[in-house]
Image 1 (tube, helix red, strand yellow):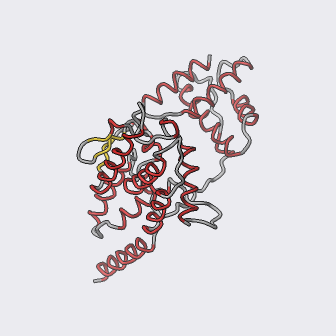
Image 2: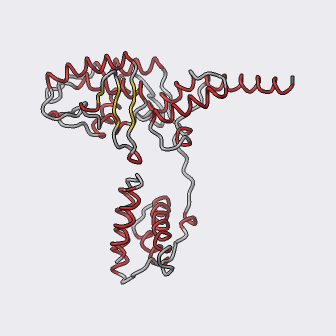
Image 3: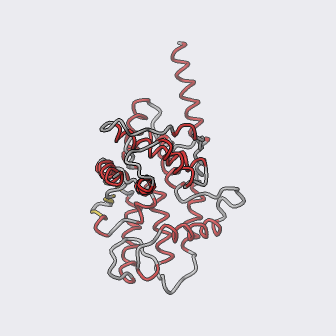
Length: 306
């Protein structure tokens, strides 16, 4: 049965650090589809029909066939009767959205707006939570999920955060600036007066862990109150705070080539990336960076001509 092979494949991939939540659902659905057709092996015809009947866009069909092709190659190494579908015929290029790089003034206005949110009886910590959460994301570049998953036991001495089991099952230690650590201590003192038994650092209504949807809704209110990114066809995202952090760090790098390389590796580690190439996507050119790059290029040309 293909479903047994799916479970074996997903278990193996997850042991390597991949989460594959959507992939598991897709492959399980295909295994059921194949069983209904009495297919004991992956067939190209079945793969194409299944992906077409369960996809509303070409991008979705490409993604499902890509997942199925990887699975088919895995099985074909053991049994050549499995056929590998060609997912490339449905490829459609997808461009990453250009990140919004917040200015220091915009972040300050967002913190002020968060502190002026309307008080709510069910959530007495509302103002304090969003000031601390936005400040933490802006100053550390944490992923939103990492911040929301923080527990009290993850707050280590000397202003260090223990980020546990994130992407690719990686854990890391994230030191905070002393001013951020001090702000977090002040927040925790306020939190202690209202929080119940739950040990998540950031809580929502009723003292329950905060969900991503709740955070996104509040963030859009904060953007509007702060007057940030209004009138744009695409609103700034809270994830753009991570891009902003990475960009600002690079702006402060030394101009010496070996120092830039060392700082870039340190940044990649701090952000929790599995490979340095993933850090490149978080960098958005700013006037300051472009000016530095141009200056370094001119110096390099001058050295070669002299």
